[in-house]
Image 1 (tube, rainbow, N blue to C red):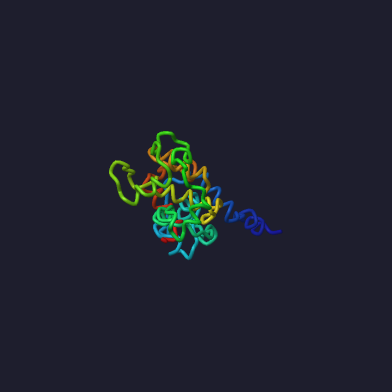
Image 2 (cartoon, rainbow, N blue to C red):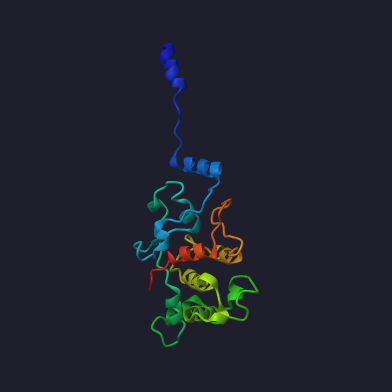
Length: 204
């Protein structure tokens, strides 16, 4: 082997796989900012019935990854859908029954005794629809979380997209900032969480 060939061989760099590059990038910069994809402000219906997990939604654009590798089939229904389905005479009431939401306290579901004390998921949904001042909920986070919980219960949005624990954390850290990816320097605010949850709804 010539000296020049040996030198060229020693300079070769092994290119890591996409997943290895992604892991190294995440470790290296710590996801300095929560990047929301443009599709996160659109409904799942607008995305062809596909949606992203919170961590994928926060990081995929920053990591310059392909969204189609992260998108999962989902068909979440909106808070309005669930508010109407809660009526026993509504055609979609069977979904409400299937969700087991009847009589469930918001505070029990989300593990926070101070959250809408004494109010059921149904009441939180209806109060959100009516915009009642006495049940003020900036950005209507509780309203959207109640719908997201119902969607999870009937598998409109599968747990591979978002879990009960993640929904509970969204409420728990609504004031201090929710981190879909650990170590984020700019966690999600209530407004950002609502935008994300809306991206899992079909709009019906």
